[in-house]
Amino acid sequence: MSDAYERERQNNSRLSELSAKVTALRGVTVDIYDNARAQDVIDNTSDTFSSMSTSLKGSATRMGRMAASGNKVAIFKLSGIIIGVVLFLWFTFHLFF
Image (tube, helix red, strand yellow):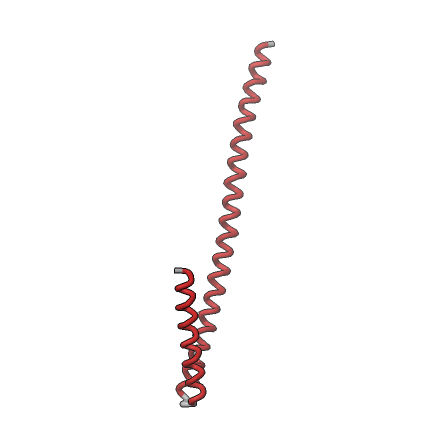
């Protein structure tokens, strides 16, 4: 009878060890999933900034052509935009730093 009790105790001990290993494996799996989702967000953000950069380059090219045409109103608009962006960046920088 004590032999059966000893086996039952060993089985319970091994079951507890197995349960701990399964819990650890589940934690690793969840961490891998979270990391993969974070990587997907990073990739999407990178694509967004890439498209924004392309759009900004196109706008800068069009504004340069507009200023090169010699139109005084266009030059004033371009100057106003540049001054506005510089002031915005300056105020934003001083707001956070």
